Length: 409
Ligand code: NAD
Image (cartoon, rainbow, N blue to C red):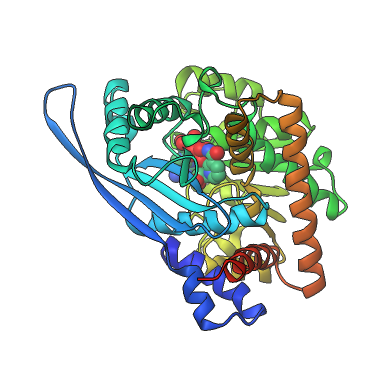
């Protein structure tokens, strides 16, 4: 099942609970605009390389569209569209005044030099600068992109439109970025894991955790859990998985990855096959890498009691049914990883106001936004006897639907 089919299926499940009319369903599912561009550039060796770039703008009923930019060799139109639609529901679930979009380039950034990465980014901005902007559509980092890439984007965009720091978020601090943005998604995952454990009479201190993916989201999630006294027994990245029954030394692992860009040679724990991490005997499983990793084939083997979707779309719908049957509580991506877009919103607000918040304020506002949304989702799920994911989609669809009806066509 493709990522797009997954999001549509989750949408349909929630739409069924409120008996959404077929016309409204069609309106909410149809993207507003799909942009596909050629990104051509000269490589360091003088050869010409051509990549395909996308910006999918799903819905703007609640405000300018917002969503990350992914540089990955598996990026395609359908995946980007699925992620754009997910952003529409995500921004609505946390109640920030945005719609949903997503972008990407089908390229493996690991095969590019720093200079080539800059060129591919700038050429992409040349192609999409007329459809993005602070009041239209605001990109942000996602897999394969970071604050440096955002710095190139703002610089290239400003060549066309003048000073405009709010045209993209996740920028470096020195270029109107926000303190707390880099850690925000992982910190949010940690905060919400804590909230979920608490609702179930547990605490982080007595929890064991496995985390798949040790990039931006995975490292900050691990650091938060470690700081709260939780035991992270396993971590992984594309280079391999590490397991330590007494708990991994997370600060040492983060330092190792900062120095070597991979966990492959991290010596202080056992190496296990990558796929084994998902089925370890832990309390909490956190997929924080790719989508579609929990499938019909492996869902029955998941032994964790709580699964936190830090990545976008890690659990496919058939697997979701199996997890439900096995009483695994899934905290859905539309809320679990919404910390990033929430602090992106704070960055945009600061840019619009030419004002800067300190880290303490950002963290407090983030915690309030996420825990308020979590409480609403939890109450709705309890009241209607539905899974957390369906409750979250209900919140999102309700808010986008009402905005659409109020505004009129
Ligand atoms: P990243 O590029 O910083 O890190 C991705 C990590 O996953 C890397 O450690 C990589 O080695 C690892 N990985 C890749 N394939 C793997 C595999 N097969 N097995 C194990 N590890 C593997 O990306 P990120 O920004 O941390 O994003 C991770 C996920 O979180 C994505 O699904 C992304 O869409 C989602 N997300 C990110 C943000 C954000 O603010 N960065 C916000 C919301 C959602």
